[in-house]
Length: 147
Length: 176
Image 1 (tube, helix red, strand yellow):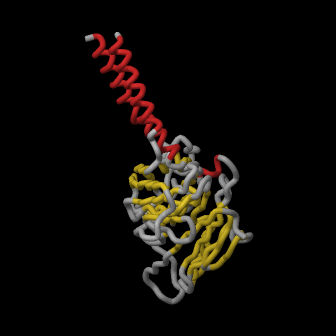
Image 2 (tube, rainbow over the protein chains, first blue to last red):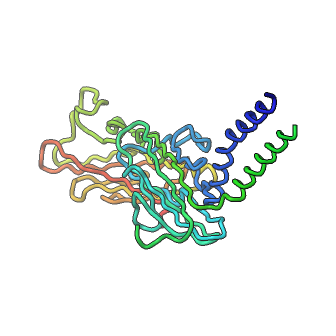
Image 3 (cartoon, rainbow over the protein chains, first blue to last red):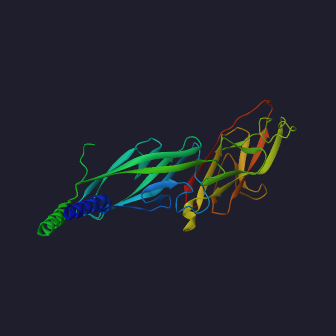
């Protein structure tokens, strides 16, 4: 009985720890994504007073405006192989750009140790909290021609 | 006890296999963007009314010289025909971008009103404007140094109400 108890404990420990490890691992393996702008904290763009970088002024963006923040995200490929990065916004109020045009979804290849700064364009509607989501997909190898 | 040791070894072995076999294939993450949409006088590029003729309508700066203005005191319904009115410091523009917390982060602000609308704008004071008067002005705004914007109304022959759209555009960096 004692043996089983120990094994169960161990498995529980493994089970609890596994997600934490894998999150850290993928965040580093999949190319380090780090914030480069005060509006970004832990990969979460947070333009409210809750952001730890909030300096005590500028509580948000005003209604019916378009804001473009250059270099909001910087994505670095720290792998020893190229990767294809796809950023996809679930809302047309949030768009990404690396050069002139901003799009709801962008993709680019990062070679070994290469970085890309991505700007974020935010379009606001009415007053209140605006909560949107975007996803980051990173796959091994250069982006293919076909989207 | 031997059985336990064996099981432990197996678990350790399994963990190692998982660890070593974790070749990168695919990474996917969902992240959020939260933005507080606030009124013009609280935002990054603040437009704050300085005169009762300017107010925030649903959070948006509005200059209104009519009895519909919530600050209308019950007298002075408007401006008469063939007059010119100059209002200094109608509102101010300030730079509240968070980048300023780290380093000086000036912005170049451009404000434009429709041409031939009888309205001209200027930055700073009327006697010594930083920019304008004109239908399109631009000036640099540093953090903690708001720039006031004044209005010149040249009223023609037509009575009635006139509406003019004003647009504000700001770019990172001081104006050229």
